Length: 262
Image (cartoon, rainbow, N blue to C red; front, side, top):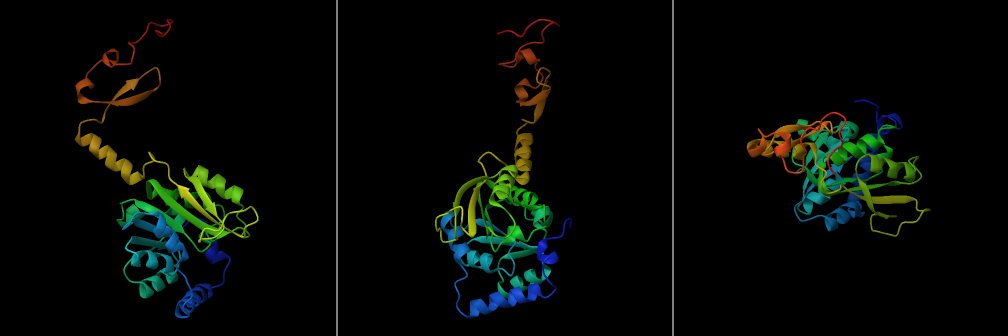
């Protein structure tokens, strides 16, 4: 672990137990704890794969699993993960730091249709790791997928900074609301729910590896140098032994001092 999450540095040693007991009591009292899950369930396809990033004791991921989705929940606090495993068997619960998230190392290579960071997760990660968290979470979501993020606007993470980190992480803000039940957003709202979209065409690391394997199997991974552009391109086997001038759209090497044909 690099920079320690504020979940540990800003709270006392008993905070995790208090947090677990608090939500167990709320559930026993019949408090509605499914708002985040209802929103996610409404915007993803049935039986989607969903990453519960910063899952805590598992209330959001458990509700999503009840609604038919395949859920992997991740939290940096082993005590919270133990509570999730005890209270909500079924989903996969893992201990990991979101700023360094790499689920392929744990054998979970398939990308997710969506990810959710509820419960002020972004304000409990290590100070200065917010961009890394968004990047790593986004890397596990397939192109066109959704990342839903909610946190209080009075918790030291300005929305302008969040939006800048979102863009740097390769995501786009598609919608923003003031609550998980879609109350309209305004600049003076005390809470923000942002629905982020991963652009289509952006591939996860796993998807890039799968694409390379398909190209190799088809014999399409041969490359030819383009000296003018200081780069190379993939070419089909039929042209793999061809000269540069034989490839449509490319010119033969030109003598020194001459201009490229118009």
